[in-house]
Image (cartoon, rainbow, N blue to C red; front, top):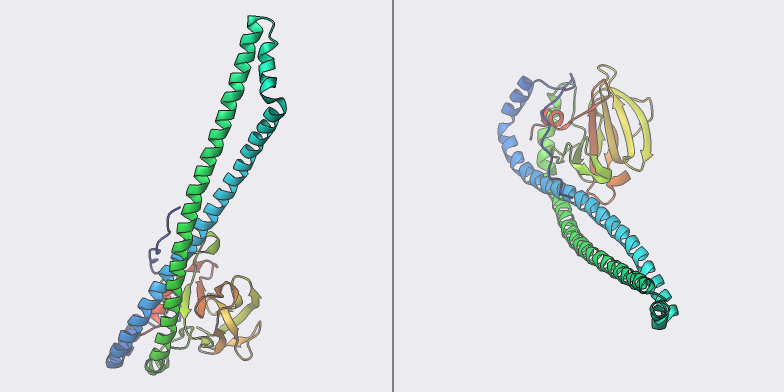
Length: 331
C-alpha cells in the first residue's frame, strides 16, 4: 500500500452570488496595500506551518491504514500457522503412539513383495507429506516475521510523524496569537467594504487547500479546515436559516446554514459550542456569531479548527477554498 500524497488542488467551481466582485477586491486591497504587506508576511509563515501540519496529518492517516492492513495480514498468517501446527502435532502424536516398531510391522507383516512395495510407498508418502507440512510452517513463520518487521517500521514512522504533528500544533497556536492584532485591523476594514458574504471564522486563522486529502476510513476531505484558537467566534457567512443542529461522532457539534436567497448551504463542524440564540430555524445575519472553534467529534487530538463545507443548490459539495480565498484579503 503506497502513501497517498497531497491532493491536487481542485479548480474553482461555482461560487455563491453574494461573493464580492474581483473589482471590489482589487480596490480594497489597493487601499490597504501597506498594511496588507506586513500582515501577509506573517500570514505566509503561519500558512506554511498549517501546510506542513496538513501534510503530516495525511501521512498519519495513510500510515494508520497501512498498519491496520499489515495487522490483518499477520492475523491471517497466524490462523494458517495454527492449522499447520495442529496438523504436525496430530501427526507427531500418531507416530509416538505407533512408535518405530509400528512402522516396521507394516513392512515385516507383508506376505508378498507387492504388499512390501506398497507399504514402502505408503511410508514414503507419509514422509513427503510431513516434509511439506514442515516446509509450509517454516514459510508461514518467515512471512509472519517479515510482516512483523514491516509493522514495526510503520509504527516507528507513525511515532515520528506524530511528533512532527505535535510540534506543528504548538507552532500553529503561537503564530495565531502573534498574528491576531495585526490581522484584526485589516479584517475590520475589509468587512466594512465587502458585499454579502463574510469569512466564517473571526481573525486570526489559517487554512490551506486540503480538498480531497485522505481521512480515516478511506474517506476524502470534502471541506476546508480553518485553524484558529479554541473559542474563536465562528460566523454566519451569509444571511440565512440555521438547520440540523446536533452532535455526531464525525462532525461533533455541528450545524447547517442555508441561504434562502439562492439555496446554497454551508456546513460547520467540530464546534466548541453554539452562539447566543442559535437553534433550529433561527434566522441569522451575515457576520453573526453562530458558534465557536473547537475539536469535537473526530477532531479530538487535532488543533482547534472549523471544518467548513460549501454545497451548491443541488446539494453536492464543492471545494470551499477558492470561495474563502475570494473573501480573504490576506490570501
